[in-house]
Length: 368
Image (cartoon, rainbow, N blue to C red; front, side, top):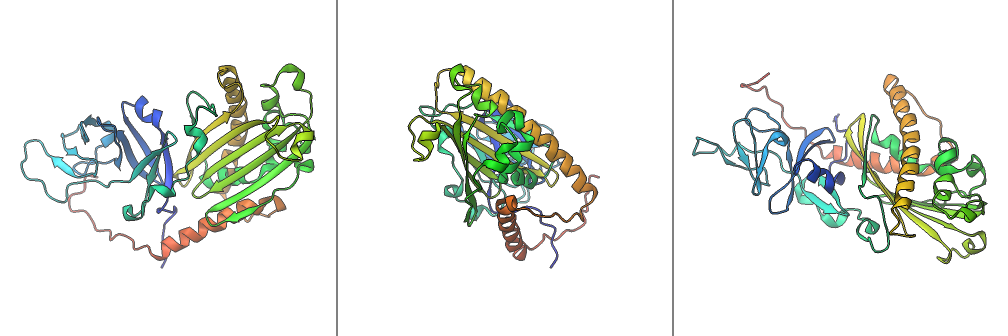
């Protein structure tokens, strides 16, 4: 049976940073996997996610008002509880059981809201890929405000980019990479294939520190060679975690923590549509935690690097949309992204095999 499923549904997707909900009067309209959703925080502090469309006349609930543990549509006043059930219709005592909107399981971990797009019965919060440094300010300091970017590109293109570190040498020569020599001299990845992603490790020995790291070092250390290690984990549907370690060449052989400077990097890619992506990220460090200049410098450097990626990936999206028949050639650096793509396609096929499309009937009361 042919199907038009584009997204794996039975998984947790990062949907918003907590501060995004607070900054928007405790409500946020956001499309996930081409499904408009309203995320909101009740007066009792519970996070909720409902279909962003009142069942009456399709007004956005994100334009509504939070009342206690409910949200009211401010078109005709229909009130919904956290499960999407209609609990009040002004001027009407009876409520048909047809009145209601879809509810999505939602959970907060690491100051990030996660939403489950599939069968609620299969939603288990233990399956969320939590990232402990986000909740450990005693040992790790990130940006004062975790970051959000919007990409005009498919999220898998961003996953591909993060799965292949050879691009750092060319795209980020003057920001995150340091030189084109990184692509030639760094020790190739040790790829560990996982059932839901992969791990890899790449060392670059006895080289100058890349610009983003040099900027936060004392002046006398900026021209001293270091060994750099990037340890990467990538998980479905698009969760990227990386430990970066810099140490003197004499220390790295034992890979010990002595004399190390470390960073922790988390990036989350969530499909908005098949052509656009929500991108969440933070970058944390373990040195001189009470010095805000370090986070400010890292933010400036990392944002510059991410914008370098964004320009290329969005241009890539335009080319691929213009000609969907493009058949890519593969290089050795593609091993990780090829594994991830296979996992994604397997999950998509498995869900599609069980997918029974909803019966579409012509509405007798169409608005448009």
